[in-house]
Amino acid sequence: MEAAPDIPRVAAPKPTHRSRVTNGSKLLPLTDERGLTFRRYRDLFELVCNDLGGADRLSTAQLQLARRSAMLAAECERGEAMACRNDPEFDIGTYALQTSLLCRVFGLLGINRVPREIDTGPLRKHFGGRAP
Image 1 (cartoon, rainbow, N blue to C red):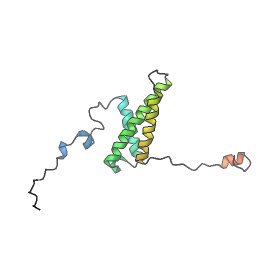
Image 2: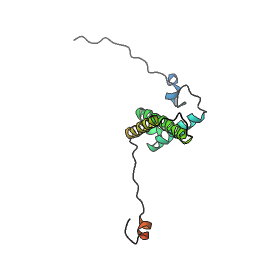
Image 3: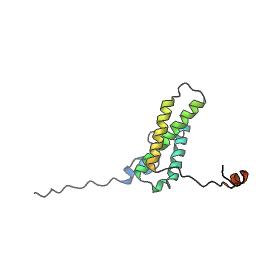
Image 4: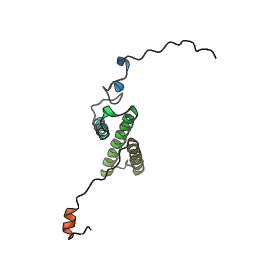
């Protein structure tokens, strides 16, 4: 076998040549970050990241999934508002699909329902010492 010819290495990109999203100065490209929809999306993204321990502790893949979950959650909320207004554009099938996808993304992220302890003392007292 012949030795591979010396191939010059490609220089690493300078930090100033990274996108604004990569640098962290923007959450989404090509957006005006002042709108109501974007603000809700950003809030949901931050809340999901906080549930996972903070954005600074997440991998790139986890950050991508957190962004997807924030968008799906915002769209679900928009659908819920449409349904409550009896908007004829509301589509229960689309809403159900979005909700299902959101559950799958949360499952991939590892966000699971954690049951908490419930104090049954007042109920026991009310029912004479026995649980209902």
